[in-house]
Length: 144
Image (cartoon, rainbow, N blue to C red; front, side, top):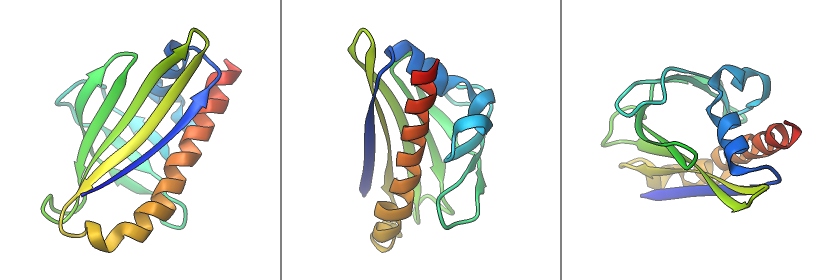
């Protein structure tokens, strides 16, 4: 198992950060990692996404929503090839720090036989993609 976690403090109310995060229609305008996301944010429902990791071709994926706690956490899971080989549970969390400041946490829990062989990729390009989205969410949320 490998857990990859990134975070950023945002000078905007947690509700604004959440609103920006959950406005999937606007992703193509600002999100460098999840370049588009279609589907309802409802537990058990599939999504259709285009993920862009630096140095790789963008990939269309079809994760399933496994947790939706408004203004707090959005989580999906997806199989990367076969579950036994590689499985990912991606999460986005928003936590209020003050009335006008929030902490955004983005991460993924990777499990499967291939995880030990992907450590460099996960700590490198994948983490870079998460951080790019975090920075873009900060910029977008603070501009509103």
